[in-house]
Structure formats: C-alpha cells, structure tokens
Image 1: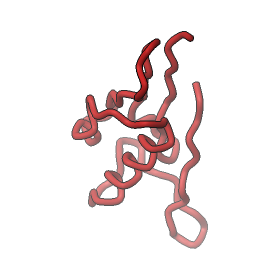
Image 2 (image 1 turned 180 degrees about the vertical axis):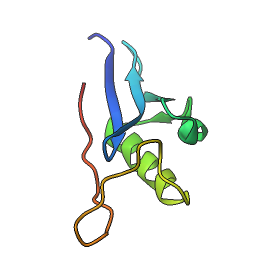
Image 3 (image 1 turned 120 degrees about the vertical axis):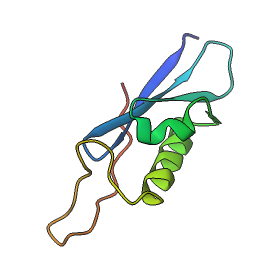
Length: 85
C-alpha cells in the first residue's frame, strides 16, 4: 500500500489536505488556509471525517475562507462534496 492524499474543499476553496502514510491507520489534516490551522495535525479515521470536521469548523466561523463558499440561488450555503486527488 502507498500513501493516500485527498484535497479537502469547501465550496471552490481548497482548505487543506489529508494524508495517510503507508502503514498508518488514520489520515492527518494539513491546512492550506490559515482559517483552518486549528485542524492542522489532527488525525481522522477517514477522509470524509476530516471533511466533516472542516465543515463544522467552517460553520462555526463568522467569515468564509479566502475566496468564499458556494451559495445557492436562494442564498443558502450548499454542502460541498469531498473531492479526491
């Protein structure tokens, strides 16, 4: 098995990546945006769990990450999808 890495996006913004090294059981989060630095180094069982944590962190903030998030025509934020690199 080789290492695995996934980009964590909120809207159109890449807010971090998660990496699972060969032989490791968990994914480690690495922030790409300073607003998500609180998640830096945290370990998650799955890439999806890291994405949910990023969404929760984003939801608790009063401002958007750089570049803003996607908003629907009705003004409600759309739940972004996890994208695999």
